[in-house]
Length: 193
Ligand SMILES: [Zn+2]
Image (cartoon, rainbow, N blue to C red; front, side, top):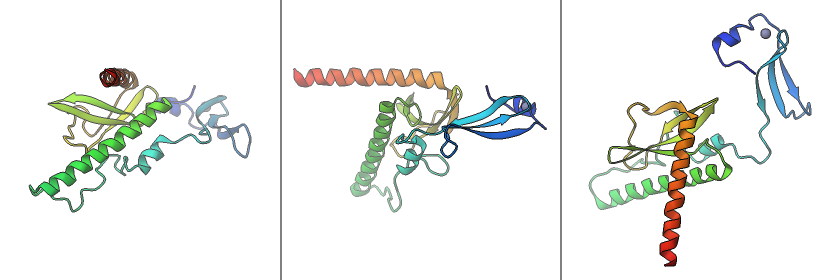
């Protein structure tokens, strides 16, 4: 159901298109753009559940999405890496704070069972490139490079952002989460030994 391409939408040119509300007219549970002539839904949205956090808004609030959707460090203004220990320490603690914030947002998304806002680490060079899921459409996820974390690698074929298969991200997150669980169990065993 619905249109997903230029050609599919083009097929409805000249038809009577209406916006229809479903449920309580004052607070509909769903709104749809429908073609009356064909009797089909072109596209529709459900009302967000009360109390449900909008991950996009959360990212914006947390400063993890800028207007250009590239995550930037909290602020490096006035911070000049002049080789002094003070400047380096300030830089390091900024990177650590950014990482902690990103970890927290990733953990919250994981708790909700969301893929949106989750963070994937892609091995590169001697470390990782860090990307965050900013948008999901059908079976594709838009991932955006996170910077301000240290090495700030970019995967050459992804660049600052890319659309990738959602299935790829799912598998990757599953693998990451399993590894994390394994490490934390290992730590608990060591702690209790
Ligand atoms: Zn139509």
